[in-house]
Image (tube, rainbow, N blue to C red):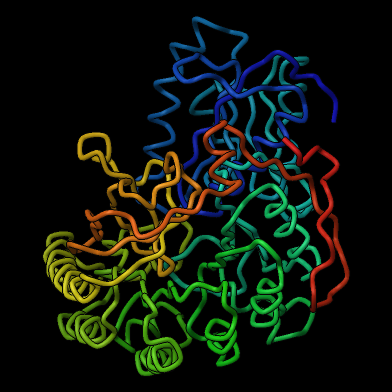
Length: 497
């Protein structure tokens, strides 16, 4: 890619889901390939990219609020450029520059690879450039990426979604599901591990429907097993599966593949069969609970989390009580709970019998209280146990005051620990691996305040300490294949950062 951006600085602000976070890594990789450099903390960037979400509540207000704050800066620095991409850009299109004419570039979810060229064109023509494609032209994996973490990386296995959930606008913004070939996924995993990354999270709107495009309904379980053959890869996670497509071979792969973490995030959305039907979720509560029973039979230590929507149109008190009952039986370690709000462009927004906001709020408070109680009970069971932690950066907001550090256990739980004791080798860094004994439990975290049982310094820790972040070049399309991964090779963009 040309170096038209040489000497110019950039900043990316990301809103929304993990898919958006990963897209931002791709955007950063492209900008740096074009000669842009990240703006230093506190520095006014030459280019500001807003990577938007259209799913979260008040997404429109958040975007236009940010654009309003940027207007004076743009007036003071006319050569500064503002770009808007992501799901809201795909939805609002040219409306963005009508409402905020100081925006220079608008691009959609299907053409994130166009950003550097659009910035060049906007500068050259002194006119806003809006480019929204209706379908994916280039799979995002073919684009370079600058990774945010030295020790953990996202790996997209598919984009888009074939489901038609009535509350969700993602299929209309991300398109139908497109699956990457297994060899291509493994090549990216290997490239990350070659850069020192210890943990990968396989990412897709419905990861367990992976393989639909090339006709293998067991492809996701095979992919998990193949990740187990990647030397140096210590942890594999994935998000998010759909209960309707969940197969027993995935449970078997999770249980039998040592580096696949015993953690499952599977959205419930509602415990009422009637509401699930209105949502077009294509499973029922009994099916959901049966999957959990099988997961726990194979992996008694599994931590299971979920998403739940409260107050979906037409939800009655009886429906809500059904959700509470499923939550009691499921014993989730935690849950992401949402109060339903209309999303323009979704079928649910047009449904009658919208639940009054005050009713939704009361039900939401009751659900949160129940789940907090369960989470605390489940966490208290772990007091006195030994946990292996991948030390994280920025996870503990009070770490500076408490003199603790934080890390994630293999089951995904957040643990705050004291980095001391004779086992500590030098200094504990993000990316290192430690073992600790849990001394206290709260609903949303654990504490390990005793001396560390072990400390292993890692290359990821070295990179984190030196401020080095992995860069992966684009991975081209490969043929469908499984088995032992081939030897990792440096990416064209220069993985040996």
